Structure formats: structure tokens, C-alpha cells
Length: 251
Image 1 (cartoon, one colour):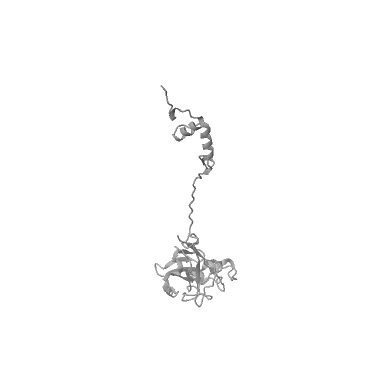
Image 2: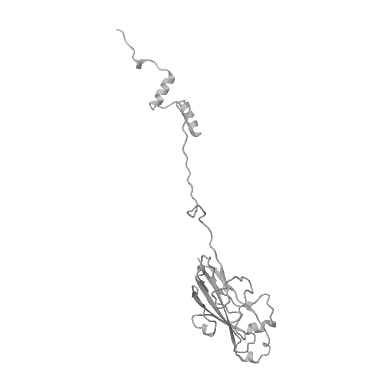
């Protein structure tokens, strides 16, 4: 009886067996594994020996701080406080940022004081129209004005004088009140005492963008006392006190 060999009985060469085993999911030879691993690590894989390359996909995403129109989206604001010493204090605002600053002109008789007499002068402060944050303003105690020649040997008159400071806030473009003794009522009075040591008891708030104006009234007095009345040493003297308005931005 003759036996017929089927195709499945035919011997297969090693190379074909390896390929079929690989396709069937059998474990390929270690040499082939090493080759595939090396190619994959390099970013490409040769498929089927035909020279096709499979590359790994990559992707990056970016964002930036913008203004919605292609420009920068982060920056700094502006901060500037200015002053006016010209009644009615609705114009003439400018910068004088170093001692002695701008001259306040006191009421008539300011250079011929007698004991018990007082004189008055005002100044208004506000932020500029482009200022983006509010400000707190603190009036410091008076110091001698830099560069102004006075006649006050030993500082006797400077030490003898007293000061009061009153303030009122004016919204928008409203005019400031007249700077007289009538301005000194509670709670508008923010400082009273010796000229050389009296500043404001609390800061005042200035709105951003020139939205409010803070008006200050200064009263300088030669006190009525036995010492000032009897002393001839205070006669014929002159002083030039200077006040600093220290401004701090408020976040």
C-alpha cells in the first residue's frame, strides 16, 4: 500500500519556520528581538525588511500672557501724586518732590506776627489721571526748608511756633473750602502741636485717576504767653518750615 505525503508532512527550512512562528505569535529568536529593540530605541522600526519606517509622534503646546490682541498681557501700573497751592485748587497741579518744594503763600501778616496771631495757607493733593492705584498720604512734621535763607539763629522762632493741620476731601472737580480758622473742627483737624514735632495723626486716602482731591489747611501761630510777650529775642526773625507729604500706593 502506497502512502502519500501531505504538504504538512513536508520538511520546512529553518528560516521559513522562524517567520511562521513569529507571525503565529511564537517567541522569536533572541537575535531578532535584539534587532527590533535596537531599531525601536532609535525612533524608527523597519517593517518586513521592505525599508518602511514607522516614526513616533511628538507634540508640544504653548501659551503666553497676552492682551487678546497679540500684545503683552502683563505690565505695571503707574503711581504719581501732585500738588496745587493755588486757590481754588482745581488746577495747577504739578510735581515738587524734594525739599523745599513749592511755596505756600500764607495770609497777610505772616512776616509780622505778634504773640497770639495766626496765619493760614492751603495745599491740595491728588493722584494723576493715569494713576492706577489709590494712595495713602501722611503729613510729616515740619523741617527747615533747604536752600532758603532765614534769620533765626539757634532756631528760637522755629521752636516757639505751633501748627494745626486740617483736611477735607473734595470729590471730582469740586472746589476746596477757604483755609481759615473755621476749617479746624473735629474730625477735620489731623494735627496740632509744636511746629517742629507735629505731623498728621493719620494718613488720608487719595483715589486713583484724580477721582478725589485732598485739601490741607495749615495754621501757624506764635502763641500768646508770658514768655513770647516778654521776649525780645523772637523779634525780627524769619523761618521757612517745609512739610513732606509721604505718599504710599495702596493695593
